Length: 179
Image 1 (cartoon, rainbow, N blue to C red):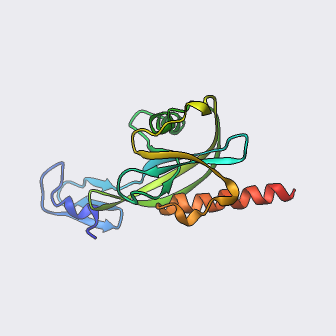
Image 2 (cartoon, rainbow, N blue to C red):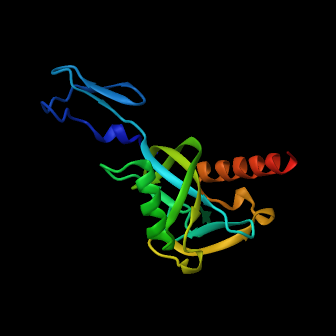
Image 3 (cartoon, helix red, strand yellow):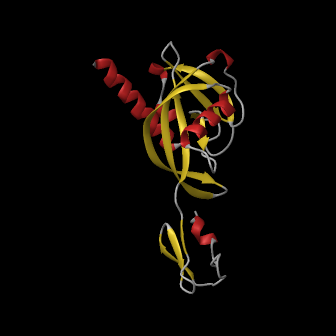
């Protein structure tokens, strides 16, 4: 797979061909000194539980990992806080209104987009919604469903960070039940 920085052949400031890699995350122009850093894109996902201890999951409508399980979420837009992105993405994919959210964890990830592996920083929240009866699949979600926590298999989730976060979430819930 081609590294996305390989597509930046010329300096975007002066046009020089001397726009060279410094490391896996940056390039620098030998002529004008401009540096470009490839930083991760911010993404967010929601753990939403109902009163029956079921987790809301979606089924991915598009690649990557089309057809696998996912959590409601997506990328943060320019000018948007991560919390605003979470509320927007949950609404876009499920038609649910987030009324409470609390930080759970963050995980680095790589997301295949346009044949490039894009680095992401995925931020996970535990949420409560105000209108669970209005749940409906939209946008990137082919399906939305409630699954009992004891039936959740983190390996059924197609994206690496989501799978890992689901495993951590299940582990934390088991630890809390033992207390």
